[in-house]
Length: 278
Image (tube, rainbow, N blue to C red; front, top):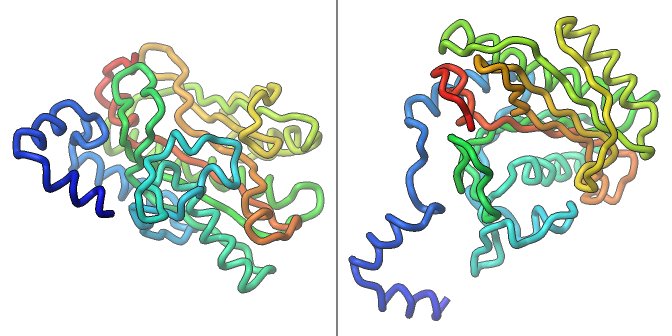
């Protein structure tokens, strides 16, 4: 902390404006604030079955890298034993675990909208920035026979995102068609992909479901990318859902399940404006 005080004391106003102009982590978002808050409200209304919580801007250091196979380098770490939130799903896992430690049999359903900061290279394309708005959903609780907990959570979360898209189409001029759910799985959860696909088709009959191998170690056996085709005919997979063992790790209880997902809310206005993402 003394080093930080010394560094701040040595800075001049010209240093502040220079960093403000050059450092993408501190510059304002490209998304208009009124547009952002409108999509926050839309998303929260679409997830009315989930308790909405307002997260702190920071989380315990290692929130991402301790329970998930990811590098601490992608997170902006503070000097006070905390880190700037780079993924709200990991923070929701902490809150889910806290509640399940108090009552292991009571399922938890949470959602949040949060401005996150990530330090890895920014993907190409309009709307991708160092800090951006994510809306996240999380279901946690004891497992059920035949992957029942995971299947129910997958269907419920994707239904909420579908409501976001449907309402935004009617009210915000969103333009899209041909929804697609790509279900990626490996041999850790051999039957879950088929069960989730069947349940999803029963809930959203117009969704094309694709079964694919899971190639990422980040997920706990299953990942679903849910997307729609934009006006230029390109599939935009902006919803990322996964089954994880994070809550099981945090509670030291292998029976606890955790399904979490997120959508980049700042990307949705691109569909409304007709501006190509890339």
